[in-house]
Length: 432
Image (tube, rainbow, N blue to C red; front, side, top):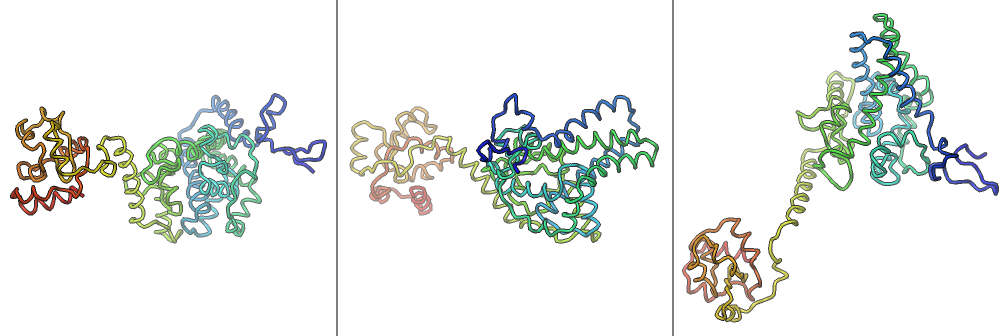
């Protein structure tokens, strides 16, 4: 039988998935994933209305913040770093706790979430990325959940390890019970049995907390691919930004994470906010976690330096460095001398012919000094014989070059001019 989203035509041919069909007045509702919409929008909406008639007690407020952190940790330390990337090993109590808390964030089972996330890493910014930011920031934030997707359009990944993980598969088979119990029943029981605020526990620690933790996690798919820096690689969209880190329990250093996904850390500097990393490290100290994977610092710094060099090269390309030496015509020495006699203001420095016509009047050493070098090899003078010119002077000189002397510096001129050996050495090096 054909599925509800893939009906067969009268000829028995399977129609395209609903996501591949245009939205019309008659089928728009079929494009919506109503189950997801219920949990990410409808229930929070009614929870907000209910909050107007339920005063927030301070104990409930504290519990809401604590439970927000715990369920967020279930996603970041559990779904993400433990199961999606296997960046560390955890004991059974930690696994059970993270599986339960992650379920309380109602973002799908570990198996489903990790399968999508591995596809996101393998096919970042492509059509096979389940929440590609290339489809728009709203789509990468929530659209991919509220609109139906064709499962076949998501890139294939290996989840064999998840299929053989008893904790993962137990949570997957009983996800509805785990999700409803941990998202609504458990926070309500804590507040109700603890200080008698059953209604507040359900509304604030349950419904509204759920909305916030979901939106925070969604920011990793949207905000972390939209704002911030790319210190390690800019070929794809992931970015590092402290704002994203603050709302995602440390998941905001996303450029680093996409470059080194097996590293249990997102933030590698001591001053960067990554409470998920701190928790995993603490669990290791008390024997609840082990095999914390980290990438070698030298490899990390290589990536950083390469990206810095790439940015420098991009900035360098915007500047006028003069005509490249390989594009300059060859000039014979006698031809260079003759052109100078004919009135062209040409000076040879480091085997390169420069036209200094427009610079004569601005020469800091005076017109007479530069005019005295016209038609001559002024390499020694430029590099310390008269004045050891600055890097800025070398850059300015490069914009004036018009040709390359055949054979480099004019040999006879060196014989006539007593220049120190070290000056000659540096000059020849400059001439290349």
